[in-house]
Length: 184
Image 1 (spheres, rainbow, N blue to C red):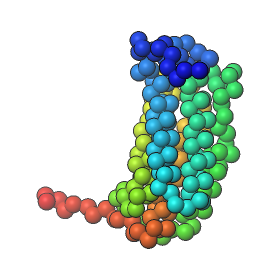
Image 2 (cartoon, helix red, strand yellow):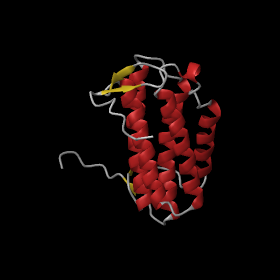
Image 3 (cartoon, rainbow, N blue to C red):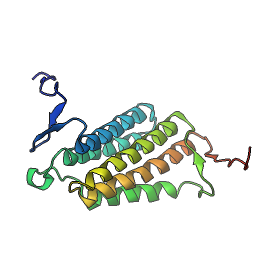
Image 4 (cartoon, rainbow, N blue to C red):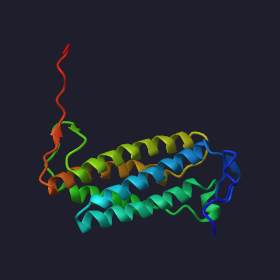
């Protein structure tokens, strides 16, 4: 099977179990953002030196494929692509709680960055928030499951905590935001 089909050369693509739509369609934008997030997690995995983190990121990548399948399908229930469930959100929350127990409580906002893995996870968090905005925009016009919305919201929280955890493992302190003085 060839990777190219030439069917998208005119700026359209087909949805799973649905019609052809323009490539700038809200649905395409939403799952495109999720795909970019998945690629960012792949980059993070390339610098993750600990099996624990790599394993978690791999699980997240698989769930993001589930989310992408749901978003690429106008009627996910009918086509069996509503693959995310409440236990996936609970799993994210359990990971957040487990990692936060090992971190100092935050007393201020922190700057994104730190070690290579933490910096990549902070970038992935920002991409996750953009994906969330695209999914919310889609949900204003077409049905999107509450599970999908909650999953991506919770995932950005996990990526923030995971970035802090990666810094802790690398012996790098979080850098607090230094607020500018008025008029400087």
